[in-house]
Amino acid sequence: MLSDLSPPPLLYEVGLESAVKWVATRFCERHGIVCEFTDDGQPKPLSRDIRTTPYQAIHELLRNVTKHAKARRVRITLSRDDDVVRGQIEDDGVGFDITQLSGTPDAPNGFGLMSIGERLDRLGGHLHIDSEPGGGTRVTLTAPVQTGEPHSRRDLGTTAEVSDTELREDRPV
Image (tube, rainbow, N blue to C red):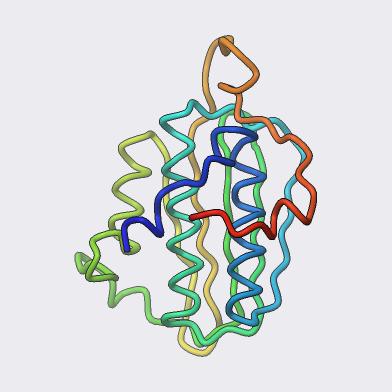
């Protein structure tokens, strides 16, 4: 299961945006869920160490959609607001009572909703969950952008164009 959360080389080669688009495309194809991916096109300069956490969080949130939500549609949005990169995953599934999460890990593998929040907090980020039974779920995560001048374009985590064919290649996740 941990190998499923390992970031693909794409994350380091062309950045968070392309890696999230790739995993979202694979996820939707495998599970027959209609998926919408949107990126605001703004640079998202995350250090190599930091960009792994939002990628893993988004991947785990998509897994939660299949395990718990019974959703037919998922919307994934990446954006940048000043010094914060924001990821949002919204589904039309069954939703849940968020008060039932307090202090309880969501998944037996230790990377559930509470763990995602803790990992983001350590980076100076945040996790916010909006859900109610019967009303779907929207999870928003934030991570700080890299401060100062990056040493190379690769450190920026900027998006390079990736074709749909490349996104569909069966690369390990």
